Length: 534
Ligand SMILES: [Zn+2]
Image (cartoon, rainbow, N blue to C red; front, side, top):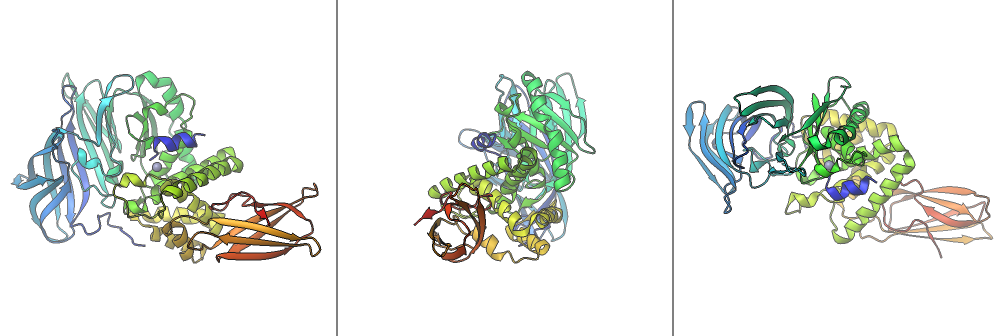
């Protein structure tokens, strides 16, 4: 996901193998939503068929579904069945509690019928050209507004949407197209099916009038662009970028996780939302000049990181957002060069610093009241910077090996930060405990006061590095002495900083005119760009 501000700026160890919510009594394996929308009313009606497995003996099963609020918005459940048998239920305070007993290991199929006007989660509105549209916007836990589900990233499941809508609409969703039929002279049925397990945050449906362009396929993945008819030429041009981005990440990480990718102009409230196989972009991103390139790259990177390998809970969101941000950085590095990428990293470093001044929290953060608060520079820019530093720490080859192995291990599953750490330690043979602890579990970053003295007689440079923050970090620091004489002589000095104060004496063959800090943009720190002479 990208919030709009971020996209604008840039356009310049515990295995949860079961895909279950921690502590849950059930594991959903398959959702089918048969739903009807119309032009006459914003009310939707839906019959959900939910296949699940009991994880323990229980007498009741609970799902998330937003109840009708005092403005009349929300969902009202009409009936619940298991086969032909009607079940009693209680729907209150946004929880649907169904009386259904089951033994551990038992598989069940429940059907739930409900109607209502979504309070959120499915945006029913008009496009900027005034056409009526319906766009899901589930992230992070807003799916429950319109689809009954276990609305938690740890309970991943396959999903099918069977949508009946007036004939003039086209319907896009996760997965591959199963059926498209005009069922009478007014309505069309469209059926999409995704067999891979998805977190609810990236399940989606988009219903609007679209111009649709199927791009030349790079292989097994069907890549298409879905834009408003008025933006046909501009949108097809902008979204055609996907043809280059998918092979780039396939080569870098693994084959594309899904069988199709639709890039969709939409009414998402985010700059982009990485719905699995059907990415939604803010409608104003379509410009015809590809200024949304970094957003497209970011959302496509999420198909691997976030959608397919998913964080177990939102406190580890950086495993989605930091990864998508750094994969985008790497794409830019390869396409536009290291200097351009370093400029972006410097900009991100400033954003992290500005954020830290207001909010001193670690990246792995379970203290937030709303998951929306996690859409911050810690999850994105700092998460990305952590990967950048890990790339230096482990070396280029091991870093990408580790990224590939992490993906391979957790594809279709969930992971926490410790799982990723374990993988990186196994490929690099390094103990990364301190690295992960300080960068992800300690708030803030090194605040460096770096000064130097030069003794002309002894030709001795004395460097003093003081960490001013409360918890000292361990990190490599590169300082570059630049000659006074105009000979352009430079000397790189590599320091290993581990204590609050580090003093180093270096014998020089020239007198430094200045000492440049972190010339190659390898360190996340606060402080100036050059050391002070004292
Ligand atoms: Zn994102």
